Length: 445
Image (cartoon, rainbow, N blue to C red):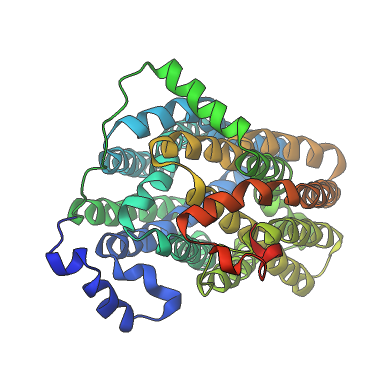
């Protein structure tokens, strides 16, 4: 982004910050404001498509196993391709990568809309288009995460930007499923896909309007395999990132796939319809939104490490109690807890990783983050679908929630080692001043 001399001295940042609440301080960056606006529109459409796809599959097949299979096909490309995509993200212009991924995603949603509205859609079509979306996401997610630093020039505002981004995602998660339930009941699933396809143009417009300075330094000229090995060596050798990603992988494998079973809970357990599905997902979105907003008011990354195991235990507890529930009001309450715990862990993990990772490896590290977050989910979807087919959806989420709790307990035992490695980085960045370290000994994680 082009800057004036005053901007380089930080004066406009101070003036902008004076008019913006501390909780919204990342919005003083013009590029992030554009991104925030475009994504706010697009993500509502994305959540509408997620709900509409699940409902369409269940309506066409009535199969829990096929719900899991569609989730698997839609996410397995991300698991397989994310490390290679991370290398390309580190090599290419990240904004151009995102422009291409958004354009292709729009085409995918519009094609699915056309097939559904013409009453020609089949489960095979859904599987193929879900796989194509997974291919797009393999490049889009690490690109989006890595590009965030370029949109927020002041690293001190990065944690706030991640929290606001999470708030935006979960506001859409609140609005999108509820709106999808209404649209499906009134017009059918096809219109949800149509709205989603059109919403991508808001993101494309916001990216086109940005003024982005090229990253400092030279692009790598080594081979892809060398860069892959460098990225893996960093992720596997640095305890804070390695431990966070391992827990994230467990949560993604066992916890996140509860979403693919929601049509079963709405229909067979709670005896409702698409509106019930929208309310349950909306309740989860409210919990996640509250979590993200609580993180937005934080002034520092300090203390986020100890929040991660607490969040995992909260997430797992919500899943177990949701599986035991047979009444709507208690199920919605547990969805609130589930959404809160899931987002608290996700945003805290993202903030820590984005804060400590070197810029020249950001794309590759965030590709492994994408693998842990999205890449494990297809196996979880398949596992959840299979378990639900044999044991039923309620028993399935009770089992998976228990595993998530065990993962949180394991992470808590690793906190001391994580803090030992992360403190020198925080101190070098000025996040943990030496004279304050004895006062906040337990918060450096």
